[in-house]
Image (tube, rainbow over all chains, first blue to last red):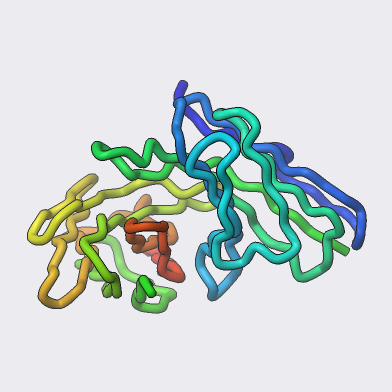
Length: 114
Length: 109
């Protein structure tokens, strides 16, 4: 089944404790992206990657890191989480080619930073 | 820069009512336009899309027409069902993806 998976789905942590949220897609998509969803603000893009070893900042990159060492994986790293990073996070992938730029979303990771 | 503006919710309708959710966009070029839907506890999924002016996207009884002259992509459905209760996001794709803030729809029996 074609899908985007994220782990963990729920995470409660404390300020300053490094964490990683994994994202994997099995559709051989070039493009991957991370978003955070907050009430009243919709989805805001954190980072995106057009291909392996190519990453770019989105609208709200501060406090986050990403890497794209393999085409299928795009982990989101919070080196020193803070309470304002409490949010619902979504990973997405897209073929981003001349035929389709539809994004396919993972199920989300709800993060709480105490 | 590019942006998407959609009507704020929440929207509450009775079953079989007509639905319109307004969406306007700002873009420098010729973006693709999308409506995504998010059901409770789930990720976003594509509802419909249009890739050029005057295209109409449709799916599950929902429709939206790409209007370049008014820079709009309003979502409509003639008769909503309880199962349509969800959050709806308008989005565009140009150099990057941009999303609106989402409109929550509740349909009551």
